[in-house]
Image 1 (cartoon, rainbow, N blue to C red):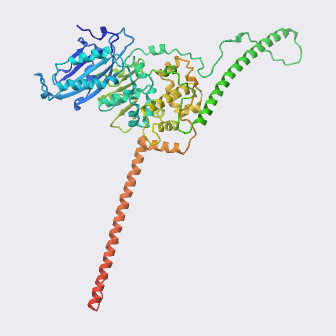
Image 2: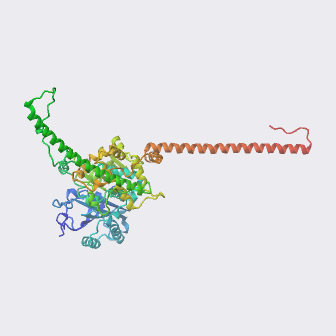
Image 3: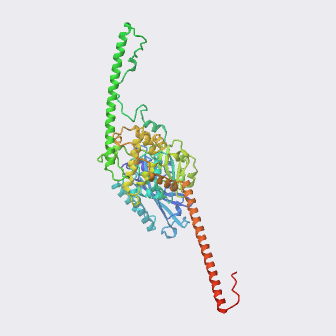
Length: 580
């Protein structure tokens, strides 16, 4: 017998391929698994049926679901989280050749699921959809040999992670300026719920957003399903609270202040021979102290001056070599360095910070666990919206993002520099930039933000929104990242917003456009203007029509009177016709 996940090969990509069907009396049923999944199923996977066959999925002929499960192998530190893909189909029951007698409904619903050790669901989604379609086309659900061949092939030649299966460009096309709001939102590690339809759109939107953080999907999701004691993350964050993270300091020379005696203040000019020895000793210690301090100050000033000179030189070179005001580069970064030298990935989803592209109603209690710090989840059941602890909700039937607290609304307000940055999403012909360019922009934004948070530069902090920066600095992810420093390569980047600059007329237009297009109040105001304009236009057209009719009536009356006069003259009648 083939054993289940806890005993299967730790190196294989596919843990299980599972077929789950829905029976109108028995509910979700595991009909097939390879390698064999022994039953009863572990409680940690008890919601597998609801993940593979989501709420409301019967209204669609097909759908695609991404989901995450905790590993059942407690000894496997490498794969604490498993990654699932489910390809759903339904078919007319009357077309099936081996229909079972107890099937009384008109349609048969099934999902073919892959449980993987690595997050390569983007790579395998299309293959699994084609395989499921073939399975349904044969209309004989007992023929499953194709699945064993498929699993064996994947385990023999597993695909490598590829970012091309996640589209930052689709995200920008859909949300435009608001994409930056969503990006800043997930950096704050809040409790976030997405509810979009169909499920494929939901899970792809979430994963496209997460993919904007460099290397996060491929290396940073190992603990995204784990819930435990809050003390664990605090133990991992080992910050030196007294360390100055902004300026360098010289700790080589320690001064013992207990040995320093202050020279007494003399009130008269009388010599006191008894105190000469003490005065000489105090003078020598004071001179030694001043010499040490002066040397430290000189060394630090020299280092700071060199650093400032380099940054000013780089800034001058950038300003003089840039021909476009919207061009943006990472300052002082050698292109030969790999991204790993900038300490990515940025760990948003460590233990108690959950990521579930889709969760079923069976997990409703899970998100209320008191140990959970944050989550980014997708759901289809509206009962999730009724939870009181959700900070942010995104749906496809609400025009605005639903932000529960006024403070979070303020933290997510885009600054003038942010609005300038969102303009870079489009080229000079108003076309959305390429996939590579959009990812480059967000990488620059994150690097710049990390640099600014390590400086006391109020102007740079204001460009990112000071309320946002303060909240960002308090997150588990930032504190963990900071505790793993120092970061010599990041320190070479000039700490400022990528689109910092003086306010101009274009900025005012951007702000007005943002208010009118991206806020509820602005849209109401814009709608009122449009309604008023339409009303005035209709009234103007009506008035023009009435005036035209009056003109025609008057003209007809005059012509009629004139014709009557001609008739009177030609007949020689004694009295003219009445004008009444």
